[in-house]
Length: 313
Ligand code: ATP
Image 1: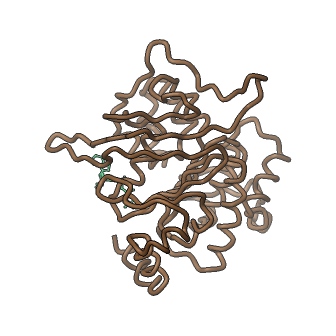
Image 2: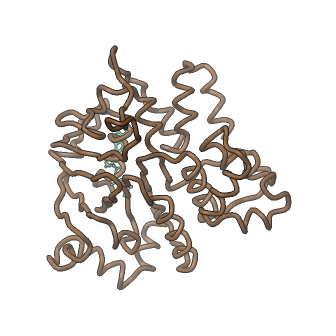
């Protein structure tokens, strides 16, 4: 990871600051490839999440008729074509759909890695084009598919979510993320080194570190980018418990690969060919016997096949 980090030294300090807040948002390499072409408008305001009494509120998220294409030297490929949905404060919405359907693109647009071509993305009724990127990203926590760990202690890796965290806060976050027993059984506890020259963590353990980080950061908006890799059912159950814990009291967007994890979401959106092909709760979508029901039956009948396909990619 240090090789990836060093080139950052010469990049402007504000960009570095965003990176610091934001390491988990994306694969670092992806981020570095991203031309920093998105900038704040001259009179950008901070995202305002306070009510008339000055108390902090949970924000809504609104994609209003959003269209977006990636532009490369050779082509313009339309990924989203008039996509609209809302996540009400404290609710959770899941995005499903075939690979390449644009699920991660929705998340990138919410974080404003790119600007939409048409329509608007609103957080608590504020167009994210008009607010500072820093305040937007401070409001968003991400539990990514692949958590980036630093070659440092477990304490450092968890504390990354909140630099000024106390020991008690660190322990509490680890406990709620269900990684405390693992840490306590590691050779040097919270001071155990992880990464290339230290302890190797499994995918599930890394994800729990990310969950602990996010619990410390305590953002009002949460993006869960679910791992595609197969987990054994006990691990999956445990991770699910910590995911439920971290999404409690936050406005949550889930990029889902395993449908079993989103049964209780307030709404499920099936993205296909640039549009939302189906939407509803798990039971509603099963009863219309369409795309979602097909995906569900596939995963139900042959989880091994599906996981194998994804591993082969
Ligand atoms: P998966 O389930 O495989 O993660 P997804 O639904 O999240 O897929 P996206 O990552 O949003 O899909 O990508 C949508 C499409 O856009 C894909 O065809 C992808 O190849 C393309 N794409 C993604 N990023 C870029 C980029 N930076 N430039 C050009 N095309 C891109």
